[in-house]
Amino acid sequence: MSPDLSLKKALKYDAEDAIRAYRSAFFHSEEDLIYLDGNSLGRLPKQTTSLLHEEISNAWGTRLIRSWNEEWIGLPQRLGGKLANLIGAAPNEVLFADATSVNLFKLAHAAMKAQYPRQEIISDTLNFPSDLYILQGVLDQFPGAPSLQLVSSSNDIDISLNEIRKKISQKTALLSLSLVTYKSAYLYPMKEITAAAHDAGALVLWDLSHAAGAVEIDLHDAGVDLAVGCSYKYLNGGPGAPAFLYVSQRLQQSLESPLKGWFGDARPFAFESDYIPAEGIQRFSVGTPPILSLAAIEPGLDLLNKVGMSAIRLKSQNLQSYLLELFNHRLEDLGFTLGSPIDPERRGSHVSLQHSFAGQICQALIDPGEGQSVIIPDYRAPNSIRLGLTPLYTSFQDIWTAVDRMVQIMETKEYLKFPEKPVGVT
Ligand SMILES: *Cc1c(COP(=O)(O)O)cnc(C)c1O
Image (cartoon, rainbow, N blue to C red):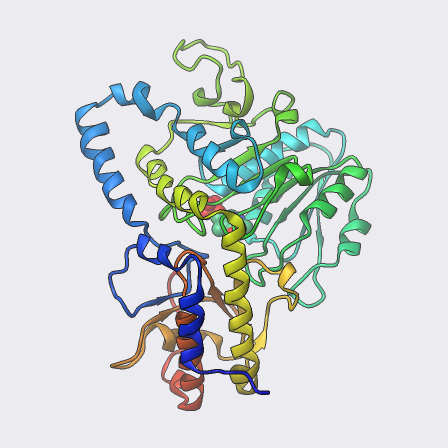
């Protein structure tokens, strides 16, 4: 029996979707805009607009510096507690601070120092480039000949567990990987990998940027040492929102941040000349947090906590399998190939489609002719179209329409109207 590929089927799935109501918790300025880039910049929760207005007019405008004691000083840890609940951590193990890159530097450096004289960090070729740059920069801070060992992928989609196991040795100080890889969405088996590293005495640092708010994560169950991640993707915290870091309680007192700022000191308002690290997770803070950007993270965290990660993951997998069904029957014959793992258990919440005209197809989706929906995916050079499926607001109809447009763009050769190299942020 051939599958039902009609729009009617998509609408039926939407009607059966248990969490469809959350779509309206987000700001939609153009009703027919189809946004499939929530894995790069999540949508704006409606609540954020009023919360920021209140924060500016009342907390800043009226209460002025009194707001530090009234609410701001504890905000990075209070919000950390709300995220902890989504990633299987305790509230006193998570802190919002700085950018992901900076947090990675702090924690990887702390791990290298604690693991001396081990000389090696292991990562993979699928990791986000900034993470690899940061790890190189960390190694530059240590004497001798420390090295970054990269496990490579045979297909640019996944990494074999055995290859990782083979690389880990008694020389390994730290294994640092992205739980969901940014291009292919490969989802590592976190618990197995963490255990393999621990067997050799290595520490593990997971980058959760494409995983937090997208997949179920249990840091405690997996025995994870360290983690960092971004809050403007699936957490919907807004452009440049402060990132987060996690340090297991059992390591907090023995690790030392290389960036010793006053917010990580035990007595920031004593203005002493010598640094004494604060107790617990607070020692990984550096300077004054960007309060307005930080405050904007809360509504997204509240929505995710309300829905719960198991319902989010379930819908994410349903959206993905629907997309793959349409892909198999409508896109494969048009030169598209799958750039993500086939196994749904090994996939995060975005799907990568590859095409030799990927850049031009993305431009045609974003900039259609009169009467067509604007569709925003993202393009990753040289040939990937990433479709971010964000369960809180992506509908089955969005997916149907996006696939239908891609078919149309190919059949009419509309993509040829666009230059080969897209410009600007993609
Ligand atoms: C998005 C992302 C980042 C972002 O880093 P910033 O320093 O916050 O800009 C880092 N690492 C990974 C794996 C990402 O996906």
